[in-house]
Amino acid sequence: MCRNYGVPARTQRQKPGPNPQRDPNYKLKSTNKGLVPGIGCLACGESPPLRSNAGIAAEIERLIDEDRLRTLEERTACVNPDCVNRTRPVGSHPEAYRKDGFTSNGIRRYRCKSCGSSPSASDPARLHATNQKYAVDVFSRIANKSPVRGIVRGARLKSTAAYYRILDFIHRRCQAHAGAVDRALLDGRMRLPETMHIESDAQVYTLNWISRMDRRNVDISSYCSVDAHSRFILGLHCNFDAAADAFAVNAEAARSGDMASPEPFRQNARYWLAGDELRAGRSKNFTDLATRRGLADAIELLYSRAASRADVEDIELEHMDTEYRTPTLRNGLLVHMPYTTYAHWFLLRQLLDGAGVERVQVHFDIDSMSRAAFLCSFLDAVQAGRAHGFYVKYSKHFTIDQRRRIVAESRSRRAAERRALPAEDQADVDLIMMKRLLGTGSRHGKWNDLWFEHPNPTMNEPHKAMCWLTPDDSLDPDVQAQMFLAAGLARVDNVFQMTRRLINAFERPLGTSSSQNTVWHGYQPYNPAMIGKYLTIFRTVANFISVGLDGRTPAMRLGLAKQPLTYEDILWPGERAPRPRPVRRKGRRLSGLRGTPRSGGRNPAPRRGQSGMPGG
Image (cartoon, rainbow, N blue to C red; front, side, top):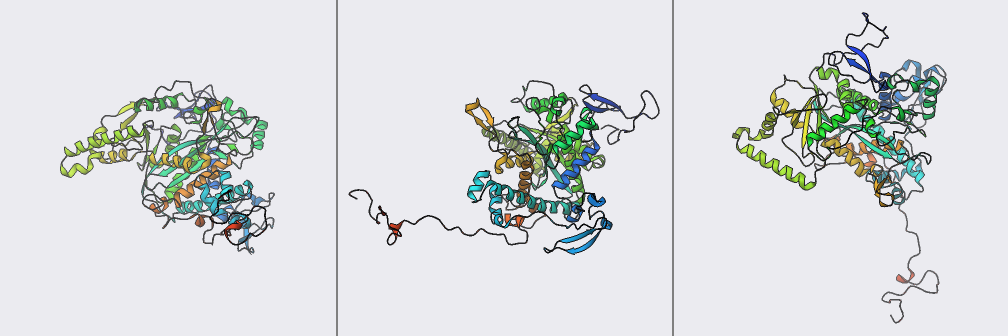
């Protein structure tokens, strides 16, 4: 609603005092004693925090690599580290290479014109022949909540090391399949509906401590966007960079003095560096009194939490009041969650534009981080009225009996409303009730956002309210009411629920009576890189293998697949899946059941009909 929406601030250094080169729209402003720099809008008075554009761009590149959104040619480059073509792939710089035949496996080989090396466009998703026959069985067990040691025993693997080798192979195959579909959407070879309703939210997964010297748990967040109608997961990313060299990044930041600079002005602004958890601006302490109260109190509480944070977009600061956000120094680095969220939304915008989506409606929880990333990535679409965002909040503490009672009361009210309407309007009772409720909204929070209650509660969302973040009074009242009726978060919440129910590593911690009811993260992994691998596997299974009550997968509902895929289709596309040989049962046969004993013994087995006991 501000005239400066979408107007960038100047980035050139300016002299203090009045001068004609000063930015007429913004002024520098910081919070929390300068720890969180921001800009103050001279039009509406808001103070959004600053982010590093270079950090967002680097995070986008990381997510592109993790999702395999580049083709083999775009990932193939010279293997000589001293060559100028080391960072120039074949796909974008074909003039730097020439074709040099094929390998013995039929893989295209190239010749670098600068140093003469021979890179080949190959996918490293390989598995040793001794483990290939177990891959399908292990894949199905991972996707159906089997623990690691249970998989090793059930699949008859030789060791846990074999399990992790097979897991890496499954992860790469899932990356390849999901990445191929995403590339087809980006290129326009596959199309999506012109209008889509997307639900987005974040989830936190807790890992076990990684060092006996520092037994603090590490929290890794994931961000998910799912299509509300088909339940197709459009993106599922976590804020952990497994490829980053933690020691090298922290050492370089210490030598260059980067750690003394505010986050947006660092060379590696997106990473949690050593000591950041001690200097980060946290939220103010307040008492959570509205947990079990009404929906309006819960909404007001969430606004209070957002306003109390030094950085309104950084949801991680809330968890730091009770837990440390420890950077993982053994392998990889944690990424500040706002950078992962921004990168997620920018990639989602490219995917939707490439697939032909013209109008989008987005729903997310009361989360300033999601709101800012959406309004930034869909800037022109919001200004054109083709993209709309909604806050959605519903009560989760109701029991099953209370939910049934709420739904039953709602049905009674709607039935009475339907009887009072003319016959031609009875089918639109929800629309009529929503249009009436649009005149009875209530405002909440520091920003005076206008909220409306939903007239049709469900078992998943028994008491729900919505806030339209991009209001447009030019739309027809029927269209506005339809948009409010479609708002919800049940599908993305179901995705997070299924990750915990179907992936053993994401199960919630157990309570232990021997440690004064503290929780034990018994199933969670110790290696943070496992979170991203399991999420990629889950997304592939949920989109292409798991079928709903209608017998179709989410990919089938969108027209991206004709039939459900199997685990063999993902691991061995177009090939015959290796099968384990039948294992003959070992051990001696009971000699008394058939014929004479195979070997003599003092106590032969009794014959049939004898008990083997004295007097039998």
